[in-house]
Length: 536
Image (cartoon, rainbow, N blue to C red; front, side, top):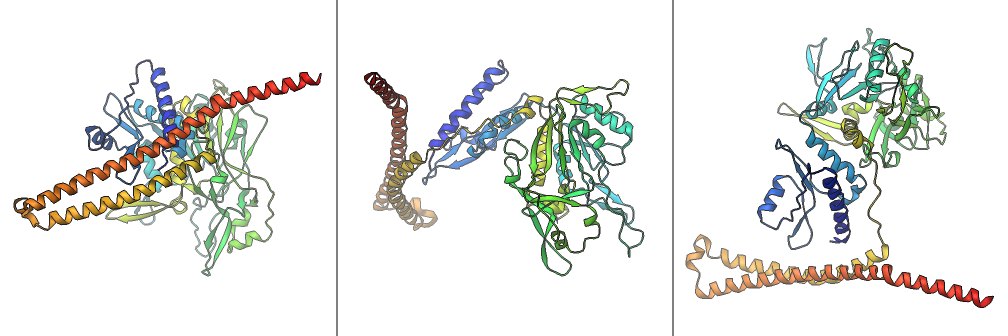
């Protein structure tokens, strides 16, 4: 394998960890361990759940991770520093340290007008299980329900709002002051929440339609407005659904968004592949506020608003395509609010009028939280087994995890990529590796043949082999074992020569960059000056 890029990345990781150690004023101790095969250090690495990665065909492995332990013997691990996630290296290390500092589970308050946790169906008197996402939150954090008439949120580390509607002015004021006072909040608003359909008294008639979330009173002063009476349609991202006639059609309001729709600078979605939405809303962003508003998720350019009334009696999803006109605009679905913000209740007595550091994430959909859009849940001997097929759960957990971090942790953005690949250099490395791998393949075949002959000879004598080997057989076994050791040594030499050639190539490039190129540039400047002076 080509380890040159990984070595360069390892130097970057080591340098950053050294920065952390120096900045900690002795509170952080960094120990570097290079686990040798079958050593106690390798056993410790495995005990920390560090991931070993094979590096060649002879069974050698590589450990490149970080294990942290605090005074209470709590431990956290980054199993392997993946180069493709290098842009968020600082965030991952800071997140690990933040977790070691915490001595108890963070306290999260959940205020939801939709039943998302375990409940009792009063018609059937049977237990209704919690949505899988909230089961996961209960395992990771201290999750508690918040009543709509709440008057204080001071003891919370994070507030989650799911489809807020019908909240009194007093409750809105309590939420506003929680945020103005430094509280973090994750908000799910929705213009057409599919799971908020009240039961109909007459089964022959359509039931009451979902009611839109009502939180613009708070959001507008922060520069965000949930557009009313429309949902987002997107022809490029539309998912296929089954109709009653057994056909499959694309539903313009049920969307599967991918990496092209995600901000690569926001840690909540940077490493995700796809998130599904249903009848999501559109967030209008104002330029007239000082609040910093950054996009997390947006539609494609093949999108447009769809009136919610179109969904109320929709029998055939293909009907949405009849008069749909793409606007060419990309519409925000999820945004992050940070920096300065003003209260919606500046004139209220004893109100905190503003904050210098708001920490809020707003997502214009509640249906993405439902199991149907991201996970298959099966009952296995009384236990719920989840098989995710989309990243909805990862996105929400990432958002919660990020908002619960320190202010510095929330503010971390991409440091940029360390790796700057050179196509020509990589091609030379591949050629060098190919040449040496030919020799390695021959040696590997010899090793396999030798091991097979040795195994055949040892097994031919059965369980009493040690007692019944003849002198010639013992000599043959010893010869095979020596041959085996010789071949393994030659394989190591082949790998050494490969690394040596790659290092020589790197030294040559350094010589070109550091010495020869400056000399050539200097000669060119001298020549230009000579030509100019001669022309005069």
